Image 1 (tube, rainbow, N blue to C red):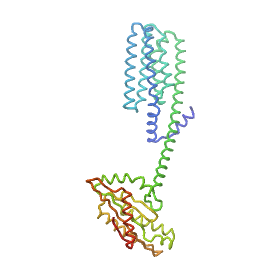
Image 2 (tube, helix red, strand yellow):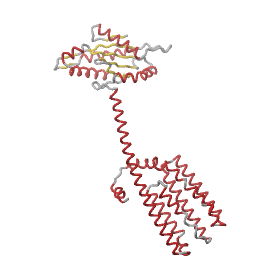
Image 3 (tube, helix red, strand yellow):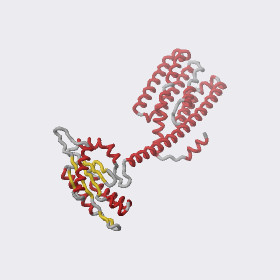
Image 4 (tube, rainbow, N blue to C red):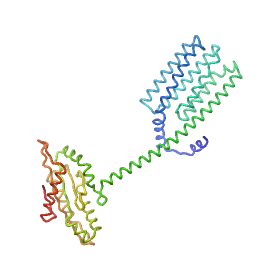
Length: 385
């Protein structure tokens, strides 16, 4: 207990941590245990049977007091639980204070009629705070102190006049219960903070794991050299791409781009230079297609695929011309190397009247055929389907 008090004195929590703990306390402590609060009410109402044995003529007033307090407290608790859980601790505090005050008031009524044996029921409420309640320590301390003061002011003076020694004995027992309940509440607070720290650690681990999973998922569909997407990404997203194309006013289209004479580049200059060539061409494709493309794919070793769902034929060919011209400007001075690409352009002849369109695989086949014709036509050119 003292270790917890020392630790709590040293801990400096930021406002963000404070609100996180408050949220944790509401959703993981107060809400799950809110049903236990209602357990006070049946016990409280059962004592109504004893009212008639101790109060006689005024028993109806005690019974009405019990029922009114019970109804108001339960209604208040259920409303806050449903509509404002952040005030549940206030609702529970209100409930236990009202119950205790009413028990003390009924005990006072009994003493006025000469019955001094009906004033100990409040001890059960103190025991409830120590055993079942999930109130924060400050609220528990306030409630227990209120109960002790309430008993001392409303009950003790009359009982001291009636039987001084017995009341001193009762006060000592109540004081012992008061401190025992405080210690129980402090231990509960310590356990709550430990649970919160464990919750934060688990949550942090979950977030790191989720971030790692997202990173791995992104790496799985990304080509590490060019940072374009790979064919796995194409396979996973082809249906979404087709759906977007159908919702667009323009047909699905694509460019198949292949670096000319790439094998001879690898053979003459080595694979490192070959990788530089692939990366350079990929950056030009990203530059011209990045804002408009449905996806940019490294389709094979030196072959790229750009798919669009917002271009007509003229726009598609304009982008292809820009790529063709800018790739031709690439120059590696240390190797005195220039490269060119061949491009096959394909566009779906979508007919909105009969809702006929090519699948993505069929359109890729058309682009491949156009690329083959570009290669046969002398390379460094564009062919369409």
